[in-house]
Image (cartoon, rainbow, N blue to C red; front, side, top):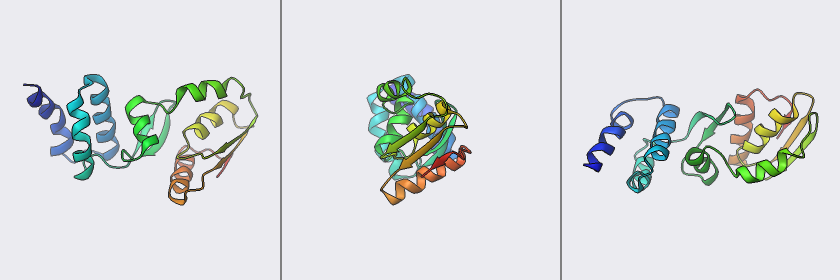
Length: 152
């Protein structure tokens, strides 16, 4: 019974050529709503066959980001709609408008994007990411969100 229901819910992902970002958001929305272990057990298979793949999605805060479900930070954002919210809450309290925000180990840029939204156009963000592949995603995410006051 439960497997039939899951098959029915997953069929739009598997049988159609849905836009990758829509597929990704739908799967993780379904995972959050149903909270079934069988969905998490299916995840590696869906990644392997290319149903779940890196895609640009809109995330909490209105940002557009490329998220790869094979990587920890994007996977956490997809699953929980955020990355380390307790860390961000401790930072935002001390981040006034027009501030300079320096992030070392920026990863794909979730804190960078949030900081720029907080500090406004008069502020400046400097994001350092030593991994070249991750830095390329960071640049892409900054560019996709039209954040001119960020230096990567």
